[in-house]
Image 1 (cartoon, rainbow, N blue to C red):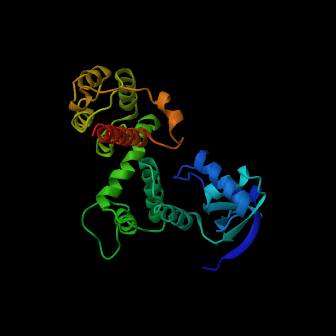
Image 2 (cartoon, rainbow, N blue to C red):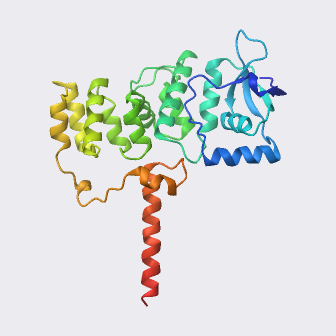
Image 3 (cartoon, one colour):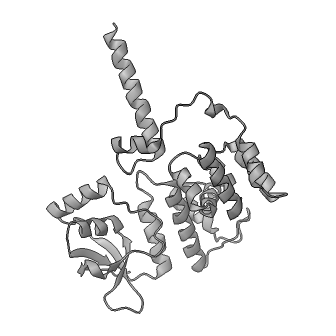
Length: 283
């Protein structure tokens, strides 16, 4: 595959359609913009020519650098142009971002789904049977091999794409754990909306046990708001003696891109540090 390096007008670059990774305008983005303003772009972005256009390109790798360049007032950036069709480009896009240190569950979910669809278009097997036919791997097996995950885990991540955005955000924020979220993904949209309303009213999220019950009832007689409320009102061990502080009161003390779980972890660290200092001073 022959590639070409070229300086391209930033106005000619377009985000990859349904790009699964979030590009956030936060403090890290501000820092990247300042770095680009001072040092320029060290590594060229990777793009592909858009079909049926003249000098228009779709970004494969470098969405954050492009956004930061726009913030820095840069009008042209170096790019590596590769002649890939959309499916091949989608696979490169997914794989080039999986090495990142922090990837949200929703990002993995939609990334794995995008790669699975691209592999299916290329002729890979899309069935999820346990036996292998001939020498051709299933899409989930191939993704698993590339991502160093199990095929079952790939399937579970892709299940998360069935969650409504509001519940998926709870997963990204760490308020709903991964395994309960997979179970909740089997609820239909109306059931998820009813569950969301109950979550917001009670300010608590379902445990794994509750999520499994919701799934079983949904696949049987169907969930009603009344049943959801009854199950959610049951006291869970992790709800006893909880200290509740609204997230909006804490946001200003932490980076904008921190999830609720990261904020909680930092608070615990600060409490532990304060405790050790008091213990030391008391000696």
